[in-house]
Amino acid sequence: MTAPQPTFLWGASTAPHQIEGNNVNSDWWLYEQRMPHFTTSGDAVDSYHRYEEDMRLLADAGLNAYRFGIEWARVEPLPGVFSVAELAHYRRMIDTALRLGLTPVVTLHHFSSPRWFIEEGGWLGETAIERFTAYVTRVCDILDGVEWVCTINEPNMFAFMIYMAGAINADAVPEMDTPTVQREDGFVLPRPTAEATARLIEAHHTARAVVRERTGAAVGWTVANLALYATDPTHESALLEERHAREDIFLEAARGDDFIGVQAYTTQAVDENGPVPHPPHPDNTLVGTAYRPDALGIAARHTWELTQGVPILVTENGIATDDDTRRIAYTSEALTHLFAAADDGVDVRGYLHWSALDNFEWGHWEPTFGLIAVDRTTFTRTPKPSLAWLADVARRGRP
Ligand code: FCB
Image 1: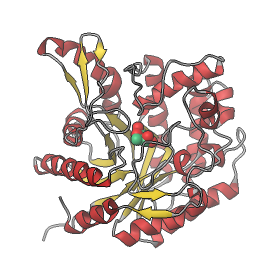
Image 2 (image 1 turned 90 degrees about the horizontal axis):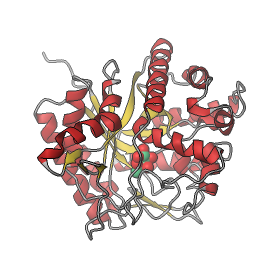
Image 3 (image 1 turned 120 degrees about the vertical axis):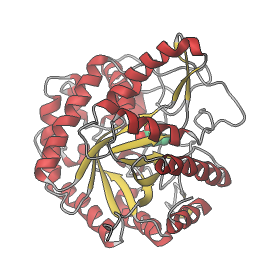
């Protein structure tokens, strides 16, 4: 008799700051006001109050998993002061997911931090690890029944935000936009600094130990997979150097994890000077990136190799488009590449699409990634055809 296969997770992902609304105690609430070209999140899509409706739409369609985050700025509004009511709110979210038959995949940190934490010195400050560990420890109290915990979302993207926070706090305007919106002039995000990288790895390993000690959940982090490639074979060494600093060092740090979150959207060319800004093209997505559904297969294979066999959960994959037919085409092809990797032996445990809802894309509202549209005045949710389509793939078990 063969052992029963664990259920493959089919679902969608969100992040608290992007959907909840009025996350006024977070650093991002400040950044979105201070950064040029940014608009504000405001009510976002009011998922703080409407999470049950959001989860129900996914469950009713036929999906079996939902990734959402816990907002540190709400749970710990002042240093060392934890809100019992907010912890109860997130516990209700977990209970709601379980009741609806959705496996909760819980992210502890998704780009936003409490403002007091940044004012105290932030991620590079002396108290960073101690503060983050205290928050994680407290959150573990509400994680009973949760099987998947992501410590830090995209540390390799988040490292740029540490730089942005530093500039804003020094009253300077940083020379950058969000990680997912490329400007016309082709600005490329700077490499994560060695200091930020080391600090985030330390934070992840510390949080991992706490989650393992206090819960029964599998724990990992989610890395932005960039599918970097050299424009020319002579740029191979530049490629390896870029890839190490921007991605591989974070994958290597996941070697002792229970799973790794793969997050892939597109590919990125590298020449002898580093990443090459992707030129404007009619096929580009709404965030200016290349239309590359094969990125997910590349990411899964590379992650499997670099982590030396850590099980993979796709925690984000999707496309910024206002054409839902294109979303279906992109996702269909992405899944074909993912399952080809799985057929070759890569251990893939699930696929969570980014995103459940159209949401606040870190300073911008135009890039729509959702399986569900939201009217931002009435907050009415309207599932797009892609939601039923993805649930249909889930029912079949593969693309
Ligand atoms: C990832 C982020 C997520 C969203 C998508 C489009 O970098 O984790 O919050 O912005 O990109």
